[in-house]
Length: 99
Image (cartoon, rainbow, N blue to C red; front, side, top):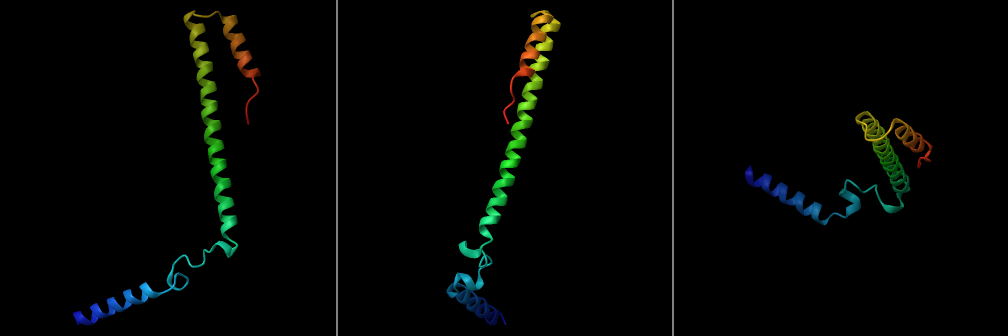
């Protein structure tokens, strides 16, 4: 019984070793000329770019808000005058946003 199982495993391994990649490969349908590879890569790249843009926009927004809080803190502790703080906030909001 055990020798029959071993023979079966050996014959299966021998067949898989001699099989061409197109026959037994799980990715046999994914050849370069299959016509689906380019659209799949385009979709993946588009989604990746969108995710990167969202993350960068969120980080920039967080930095802008942090700067506004710091200016408000400087005004509150008296380091800068309220007029200077207001001028800084107005200048920061007039700066063209990238994007």
